[in-house]
Image 1 (tube, rainbow, N blue to C red):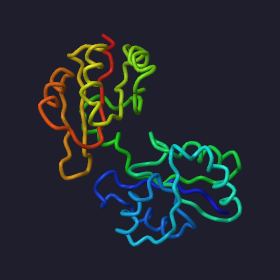
Image 2 (image 1 turned 120 degrees about the vertical axis):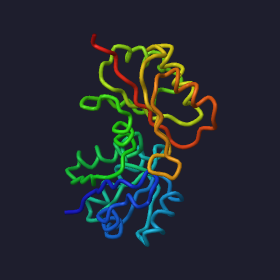
Image 3 (image 1 turned 90 degrees about the vertical axis):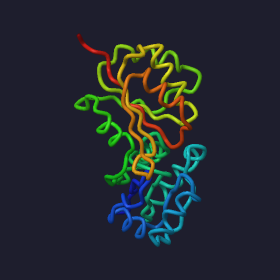
Image 4 (image 1 turned 90 degrees about the horizontal axis):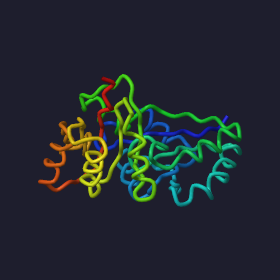
Length: 225
């Protein structure tokens, strides 16, 4: 029975690609890529010649049904994103949902996800945590932050370099500048950085440097005392 494979790809270091992921990408009928130019470099590196199709947040509503039909007709497909595990703050949810609705088997391979090493490296409580992904950029942002004021679990956020200072400052305004946090960037890459401290200390640290790379913020939950 044909199926949809959800295949994680490295978030930085290409050595994090698994043998199984390489084999699946070579064996499937076609690959769905968030950005075919980015994924093309990965496929070339591992000598994967399977044809790719573009599948991203701007077309996934329109293409999910057609892809599901192709799989139901006998083609295996693999879904990849630019980095990490598809459907985690990346396209993929709609296609997975459609396939399951059509009784098409979906298999997600284990692999790279940015928030796991960031959480472990943070030193913050990790037995219970909540993943918030990207905050709303404009509408609903203030409301979202205020809704998290009393959250006692460690909170995990994704952020872009140019919004990092703004986000840390908003956290400090809403939750207090003494709240502990950790900022991880360039995970698994040559210039990986994991900076821990209070929100005030993190704002001072990153305000004094040029910020590059994708960002994961781990924020301490509210004390129950």
